[in-house]
Image (tube, rainbow, N blue to C red; front, side, top):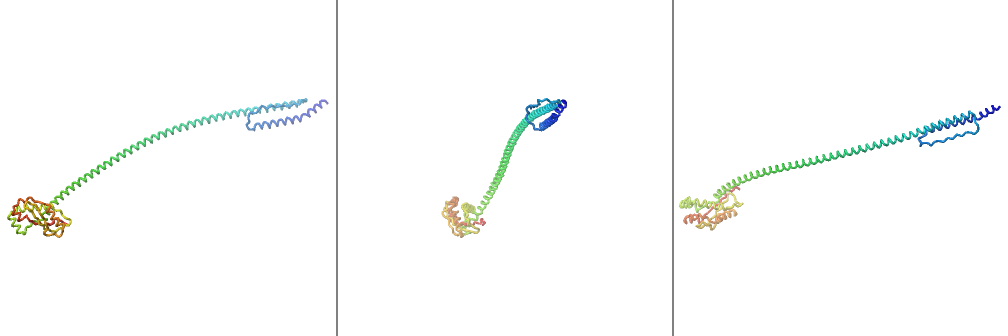
Length: 319
């Protein structure tokens, strides 16, 4: 009877114990799953787990169950600790990896900075070299420009000298031509004067017969030479007026003294042109004196030269 009572008492504690164990197992399972899938958190503090035991006397099965639950709790705690250790190790590893990455990034940044500085220095060096080359090229170009300018100036000077030489030669040739032309003109003028002298004046007596008779008396040589002299001297003093034309003729009477001084000249027959008449009278008066008349005896002088007529005929004019 007593044995049955004990069995009944054990049976009365069995199912509550089973339910308690089942609930604890479920709770530990849920706790494990929550820790396994939970996000990373700071290291967890040690968990203090307290187990309540009934002070009442328990059966052996209850004790075993309790011990089993305690063992499972210890295992769960160990797994939780292991998980925490793994998490801690993982965090440390992540920190190390982050530090390593930071170190690598810093090294990479330093290398990039070094490369950038080297590149900058290289670019500065190239820029300096290019600047130097540009300065050399500029200096060379300036020298070439100066040389070209000097060459151009030399060519221009040579061209100017050549041009001046050509101009001088041309002027010299022109001067020679002018001198030649002047000489020819002078010769022509002299020939014209000689012709004009013959055409300007003819010494006339009262009649041709009388002149011939007188010439026979004094000699052809003396009369001819004095006539030529008078014509020459008067021709040298004659200035052609602009109105003179071919076909004009003016007769001028010359009055002289025995010493050859011309005391008067007047028109005895006009040409019809006052300037031409005046030019003939002026030419005679400008002779002033003919000293050679003193060589003629008084009879001849009185007969032929005290009053002598001259006829001016500008036949040499071609207008």
